[in-house]
Length: 190
Image 1 (cartoon, rainbow, N blue to C red):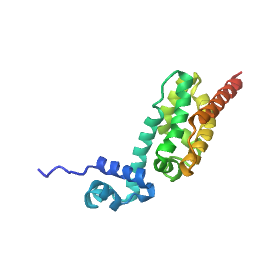
Image 2: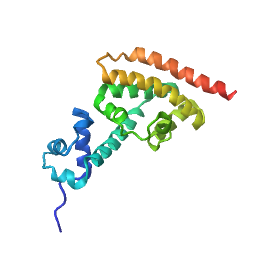
Image 3: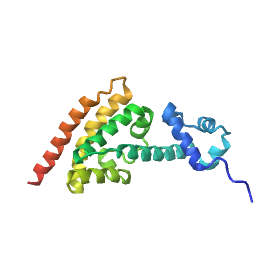
Image 4: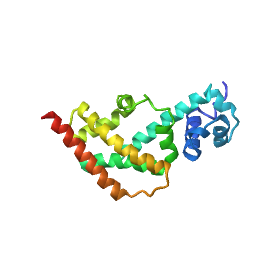
């Protein structure tokens, strides 16, 4: 029986994600990932025929991490909704390289917000929002689009510039946008 591989595919993906977190997604290559694993490039290339395949796998892992990060909000329904938005912005502050990888690298599913909103990866976030707002799924998508534009703008500014993160001010603005978006969708129902 051949010996069990010491460097698994999951370990290679984790190492690529670590490289992206530390130095940016552009730094993912066979040498940097091998260095993170303390091995030769052979195990990296054994599991991934191309670096693009490895970057795509690292992107998927980063997306899973991001989704879990977003959904780590608690409180009443409104606090959960605001918490998801604040977590999105906080993620950009705490993980700027992963934020840029997820939203500014070209690896995201679809090329537009409307394509992204229909992606499978967004279903858990939309479902959590839907429960919190007591709207149907299409209405939830409409609120999400409004919130996404606002929250992504804040997050992008913070991830790409050295601006201070003022959580109280951002929460105040986010609450206004959230309340207004829900009111607008409910008005359209009448």
